[in-house]
Image 1: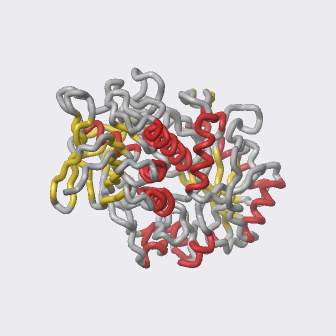
Image 2 (image 1 turned 60 degrees about the vertical axis):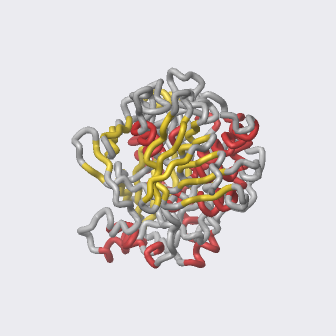
Image 3 (image 1 turned 120 degrees about the vertical axis):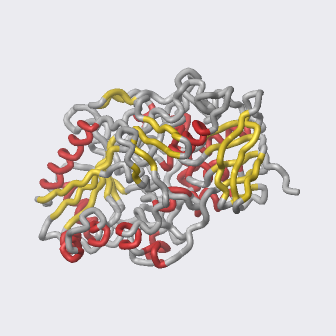
Length: 502
């Protein structure tokens, strides 16, 4: 007979895997339930036509738009390691200012319930866990680091070194991105970018290869794949009494001491809403009515800078970014956001967005271009939210701060032209691109306005934690993966310090 685990973690993405790593060696018996399986190393994993044109790895899933009821494929992934299997591996800290109140063009980004100093040691631990490559001193907005990076940054390829120098000559401060990539191992498998390409344990430092691998060194921590959780059931005392899940066509239940939801910002919120009962008619952990609300998804636009005299034969490209417009517009105005290189946008990749164009012409364009991502903060709004309608997930995304987003694009266009790129093409990303979804089960100090406390424990259920991008009260304007991992490690320390009291 199998022993009931002390802790069940639902999901093996950045939150769940990092939490498990933080619990390793604690003596707790931990079971991770993962809906997906491990990614198989097939030829499609490094085939841009399969990935971008045919959507080979996209899940057979639809969500629905609240405005018109239309269905769309959301582009979230269900594998061991979650969405991190496809991420760009940018493991950057929120800026220290992101933890305080920031006034944007589109409104206020509120303060966190604690400051940067409270999470800084966990950022350092997360950087070590995910073997981040980086360097300090190049980014004027870089917050304090108590521990330097263990590994040197991924070097620029020749064309990118030229672009970095051109941009620096305009007065900008291009700085090496902190990356979770063993570049030699990645390129040994195949000469491709890593951004949006799935990792089959071939060099990307993702939730499976780092967080989960570290956790599973502890024999008390195990994972079951193909395990899809159906609902959580609360008892009369308010605690989560048991989990109902399906595996191999069989319905199963578990009653652990602690339940951790780490299914992602949309699916964790949907699980809580779908688990409503007579005592919790608005869903679990939702006395505050914030579950599903405050959905945020970065405003993102691809920028392709073209110079017919420039020759780009780079393979991966994604090595530096710019935060010159992060805390202001560069002229004393309000914050705009972050600019970073995209993974190499080749002709086959580009054709996915312009299917009628001949691929050869797109390849010619790509060979004379360099690709950037413009990204800015989506501000929290209670009416930006997800609902559940039976088994359907319904998204009502109210974009915010778009004036600042356009100003960021315009400012970068001006600098790119000054750097010798006379043509700058742009393409915004839409709802099919999960650009760092977050905020749907926000944490805070006040149970009236938050679902979780500052350790990610539900205010309404003493043995329920939500540890993934759901907890984020603000989206900031940088990639959130490292912040999710850092908070997961912080939550693990809290669990251990309190003796797994629930």
